[in-house]
Image 1: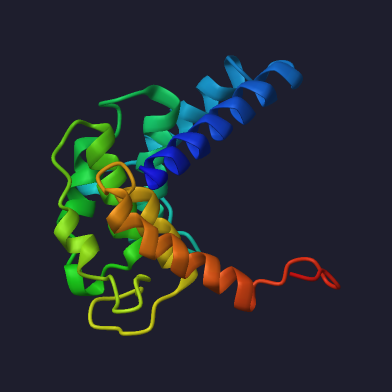
Image 2: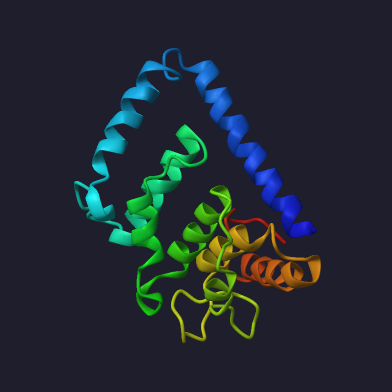
Length: 182
């Protein structure tokens, strides 16, 4: 329940920020967005390859971001089938949790049945999520990605330990405000 509320709140904030940006910056909403969308669609080639390779992201991360952006800008069913198929066919052992979470989110948005077991197999004994299968040390980033993807399917009993783990990481390590007392 709590995870669902968090997921809905995060989605509402993202949507509000997008609408606010479109309202504040003249001309961003129609012609520029359409031009960018056309360019991005042209980057997806047969077989799910992208026209250019990122210097900072893996191929799977790039594919996932492109598919997610296309869905966000164009609506359900607009991510090219070759792109999502390439993500679905990636070797599980070589796929980072971030990409598994993104793939699951894409499946949910396209009314497919998400394969949650692959993502849940990354959950560690401490209730965080590891980057790769077989790793025992969780990371906050991978845990956040996994929680976002699983939130709509999890009960409070499943989500609460993961949220508690993230809160503990924040308390222990993420001192974002120097001099701030907790």
